Image (cartoon, rainbow, N blue to C red; front, side):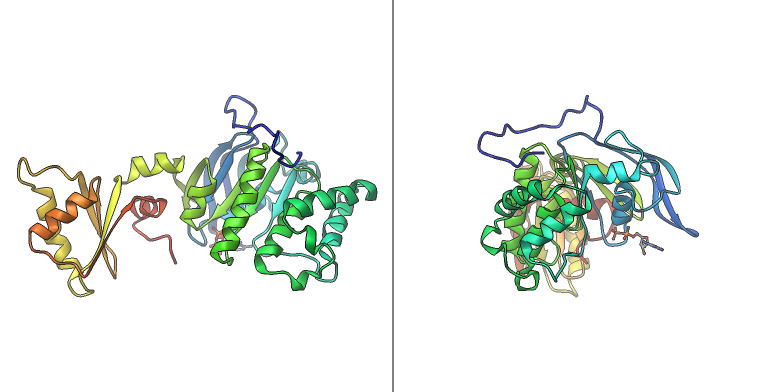
Length: 335
Ligand code: ADP
């Protein structure tokens, strides 16, 4: 991989080419417990692929099997055309791995962290000195090269962890919950860096339980729950297939939400002829609010007001992956 520059052409996934990663009936059991339950997927080269699901869904376990650090119980897997179980070192040499927790060496400076990591791969010092400069610039840390790791902010540490993982010029980058724990600004800076890597042709595989992150970064994703794949597709396609175009969020007060939901369901299902179809689908009752799924949420709200229902607050928004997850599992992804 060469780092993106102004002249780098945007690489797009080619589904016809050999996959970057392929899994068939991939299964991992811990004793009687099945953490990953016969999942199959195929990630094209240059694709940005996400595993979206709640904590405990089996995302990290799947990543560990890809990274050749956990053995599978059954099924098949290929990474860059190799079997991680039989060719672990070769697979690891092709991967950049960004774990959930930064595991930087606090004793070393920012720049030395990159150089020492490269030494583990047996890369020569001369190469690494130039590489460290390039990667520090990419990570927007050139000015902090001599700083101690402990003096970096959370976002900077994350960027250094990513820079370090790029030292062996991997074609596949595995990121486990890349922005969990970062503030919104630091997340956006990180997303920007990941976009650049994607543009340079690096295959990105990431786990997340943040739907906005999945929507921002992933060309395609699988929604996983209890170790199984619930749905697969681009964020837009998943939303189209499993939700309405828009959602109306209403608060009537905790004690009135459920009863009001029944009345609204009746109202929106049986609309008068000629009053306009709002594309109503269904209502989800959450502890604190109602989610009215309708293609035209604003029109649904007008109808609700016209029938003298007066919510305390109302909000019209587009459907998101959170709605897809709620529809597929009956549970909210936000924990
Ligand atoms: P996620 O990354 O989606 O949060 P994990 O892959 O970490 O989920 O975990 C999936 C399930 O497997 C969880 O219920 C977890 O407790 C269990 N698990 C993970 N690692 C082990 C292990 N080494 N031994 C036993 N159970 C484990």
